[in-house]
Every structure is written in C-alpha cells, then in structure tokens.
Length: 242
Ligand SMILES: NC(=O)c1ccc[n+]([C@@H]2O[C@H](COP(=O)([O-])OP(=O)(O)OC[C@H]3O[C@@H](n4cnc5c(N)ncnc54)[C@H](OP(=O)(O)O)[C@@H]3O)[C@@H](O)[C@H]2O)c1
Image (cartoon, rainbow, N blue to C red; front, side, top):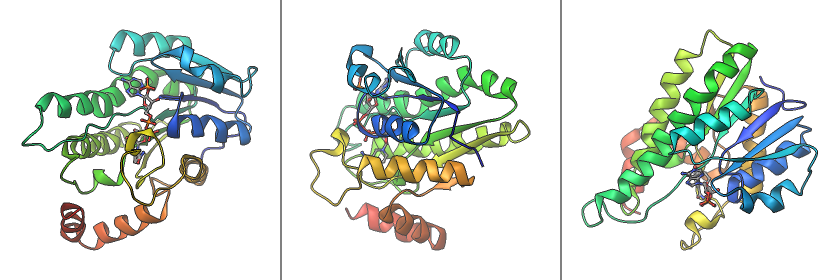
C-alpha cells in the first residue's frame, strides 16, 4: 500500500504516451511533486504547463549512466519511481540486425537497472517507497516480429523480481506492470484493439495504492496472465501464432 497523495514521484519517458498519462494521473491524485523526465526536456513543455507548481522537467536518457546519476542527484526526495521509458524495435530475430535487439535490451532492461540503482539509496533512506516497472504482457511469452522487445521485457521482469527481493526488508515495494496493446506511438502501425494510456496509468496507480505486486492494467493482460498461470505453453502457442 503506497498512498499517492502528497508523494514525490519521478516518471521516465514522461513527454508522451503512457509516461505523460502517468503525470496527468499523478496530478489528479494530488501527488505533491512530479519530476517529469525526458531525453529532450524541450519536449516536456506541454506536460510541465499542466501545473508548473508541481511538475519539474528533468533531462534523462536511461541508457546514459552519467545522465541517470545527474537526474537522481537532482531528485533526492523521490518516494515513487516509475520506470516507464522504453523502445520497441520491429523485426525478426533471424532477419533483422542484432543491434535492434541490443537497443531494446539496453533501454528496457539495462536502462531500468541503471535508474533503479541510482534511486535506490534515496528510497531506502526515506524508509518507504515504491518502484513501478512498466513491463509488458510479452514479458511472459514472446512473439515473432518483436522478439527482441519481448526478450528485453522478460529480462526486466526478472530484474523486477530480484530487486523486489533485495528491497523486501527496506519498506520499498517493487511492482511489475504487464500491459497489453496500448494506444501510443509505439505500436501506432498495428491495427488491433488497444487500451488508452490514461486507463493504463489509472489502473497502475490503483494497483500501487492497493499494494498489488503484478499489475494487470487492462482486459487483455488479465486474460493472458490467467492463461500463463494455468499453462505457460498455451500462452506461448497463442502469442507465437500472432
Ligand atoms: N504501447 C504499448 O502497446 C505498450 C504495451 C506494453 C508496455 N508498454 C511499455 O510502456 C512504456 C511506455 O511506452 P509508450 O507506449 O508510452 O511508448 P512511446 O509513446 O513510444 O513512448 C516511449 C517513451 O520512452 C522514452 N524513451 C525511449 N528511449 C529512452 C531513453 N533511452 N531514455 C529516456 N527515455 C526514453 C521516449 O522518449 P522520446 O520521446 O525521446 O523518444 C518516450 O517518452 C514502455 O516501457 C513500453 O515498452 C507499451
């Protein structure tokens, strides 16, 4: 259970998509201060304008460790860390350049690790806190065509579990979020039913406030997670056929 009201939150990839929706939902829930982080702070102008007294722009590239350290030093009062920044490279494992898979791994897995490492001392020193890792339902079973992305999210899921155990005695909760398709730039090219970023942000913060460990923020993720719990091979076969 982690109350959002009056908390100090830090959101990566806050300039668009789900990250921006997190900022909006945090405002609605009366967060005290929100650090909105983006690779290009000039692209945060619209987000900061939502409430200049509570939203503070921060420059952050999660793959650049100096940038991560500088952001953590700037935001030394954070209680709720939302690791949302991510990339998705379309392409087959066999037919695409392996650099595509490496980029998703560096952003979605290593980037999340760099940020957690930089902020953990602050969360531990406060004596309470929460980390939210935005994963994907593809962390549970992979899909051809975006295999590198699925692998990076599976790695980030595994990271989430280990960090949760490491922080278990420190009153810092670690949540994994497993969205299905969401209506953002990331999968703009795909024609399929999608959940709105606002609904994902709302369901995720409901989960944080209720102390839910694995957060399933939409109907598709709930269904896929239930299938996976019952028989992981069934979900693998379903996703493998897509
Ligand atoms: N959309 C979906 O269907 C879906 C489903 C499940 C999970 N997710 C996850 O949800 C999260 C947000 O995705 P989205 O759908 O909102 O995608 P999006 O609209 O493409 O936004 C991605 C965000 O991540 C930022 N980002 C990318 N690389 C970064 C880096 N190296 N350092 C800092 N920020 C970086 C982007 O910044 P720039 O503007 O500078 O590029 C942007 O703000 C991701 O982790 C994604 O994997 C999305």
